[in-house]
Length: 253
Image 1 (cartoon, rainbow, N blue to C red):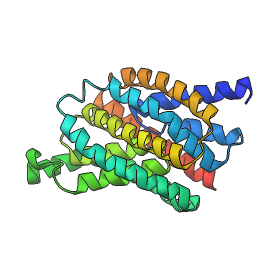
Image 2 (cartoon, rainbow, N blue to C red; image 1 turned 30 degrees about the vertical axis):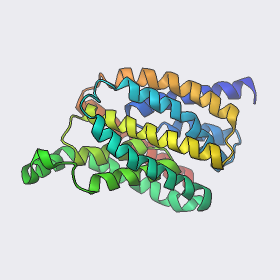
Image 3 (cartoon, rainbow, N blue to C red; image 1 turned 120 degrees about the vertical axis):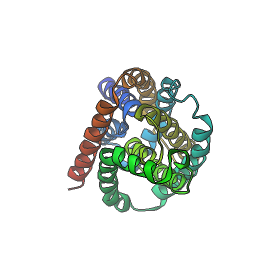
Image 4 (cartoon, one colour; image 1 turned 180 degrees about the vertical axis):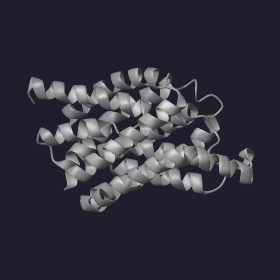
């Protein structure tokens, strides 16, 4: 690995860590860089997942104020995220990549639609059932599990998928939802990192560079993201999500 290649990976890791703390889709910074440098897709995906896990934890810590009062909820949902990440890891090592490559852009677009209409859905659900019943049914844990499967297989935009699921099910401010999202995404990334370390062969120099960059980016991203107004944060999430979906479609065709 040349100095310039190492610098490119490090900078991509910084960008990925920052955008993951605010929205998600940080993989779209690092994954294309690794492919451009000649790493095989599966190796790039595995190394990327392991490398981004420290940055995800940094982003979650940066939102600790918004997590106040949500500890039990986050812990309960984290179990589903962990199980989903293991399932996604098994799929990545055993299924052809074409299966999820077809589904991923559709999932991201649906998530963006959910984020746009989520305030109206939330108001409707609140009027029908009452705020005290929101998030208590089986749909939220199952949705978080599904997001964990997606994140364990291909981490790009898992944050957008999580925010859309949490925002529809929970009667919370978008910043508090984003805080829970960061915790669950960090659980998925950490679980996937352990899984791939045991059952696969990451490129450890790449992992180290992405990890260092993502920690720096996650800290800065959390500080900036917490200052955004709910409307601005929602708009940023949708914008990044649409860009992610377009990028994946263009890459495929």
